[in-house]
Image (spheres, rainbow, N blue to C red):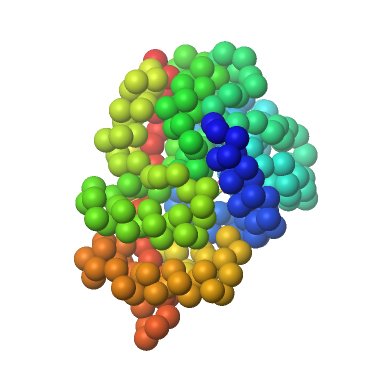
Amino acid sequence: MSEAHARRVQAQFGGSAAAYVGSAGHAAGEDLDRFLAWGAARRPDRVLDLATGGGHTALPFVGIARRVVAVDLTEPMLRAAREHVRACGGADVAFVAADASGLPFGDGAFDVVTCRTAAHHFADVGAAIRQIQRVLRPGGALLLQDILGHDDAEASAFILEVERRRDPSHMRSYRATEWKAFLRAAGLTVMEDAVIWKIREWNDWTGRMRMTAEARGALEAFVRAAPERCRAAFEFKITGDRVESFNDRQILLRAERD
Ligand SMILES: C[S@@+](CC[C@H](N)C(=O)[O-])C[C@H]1O[C@@H](n2cnc3c(N)ncnc32)[C@H](O)[C@@H]1O
């Protein structure tokens, strides 16, 4: 990835590490339950959690795998995650600073790779998927969850602007067909996929990324001024001048290395 984008990610997440560790929406959810069910069924020995953030996916995998490695690009995030995971009994999780597009592990080193709520930050998703394929053993599984791209161009441009104003390190989210093409091109076959909804409480969502009151006010004005059909596509709830929440579709994929 470009140095400039890496710095953007690190600037965004470096200052928000404590907020991510404490985020209830990351610590639990239907997506995490699905990952754990998929992961447990495979009885993995070695699991890599890519872009671990606050470590909320790595932590429950400690109960499933013999060895869990958590990778992230942002060192302060890794430190906060390590502290949190150790305090919760995950003393054996190894934390490694690395970029998704250059994983410092041997070929076939893992049985399962998890990547949850992170790929929309990757500058080169194709390169990251190729790395995941390389570090998975043949027959190993990728469990992936991310924001689902919208099929409508106007709705998609609207939510991209909302996301980027809140977090300049947001690159883009991909539609199901795009995900399947990335995976197929890398030699990964999709075995299962699902779409779930996550309600984003506006104050929590904007607060986690430390938006100034001014920037948040400008973003709320942008949302209120957007075409009704764009807001409706994400079920924005607005009371008077206040944005309350929106509905964020997520894709979940289980793919196997050929
Ligand atoms: C929302 S958090 C991840 C949440 C976490 N996976 C979970 O399950 O709670 C996004 C993380 O992706 C990391 N990240 C972004 N781009 C990355 C990259 N290219 N390589 C590795 N980590 C990256 C950020 O540093 C941040 O910690």
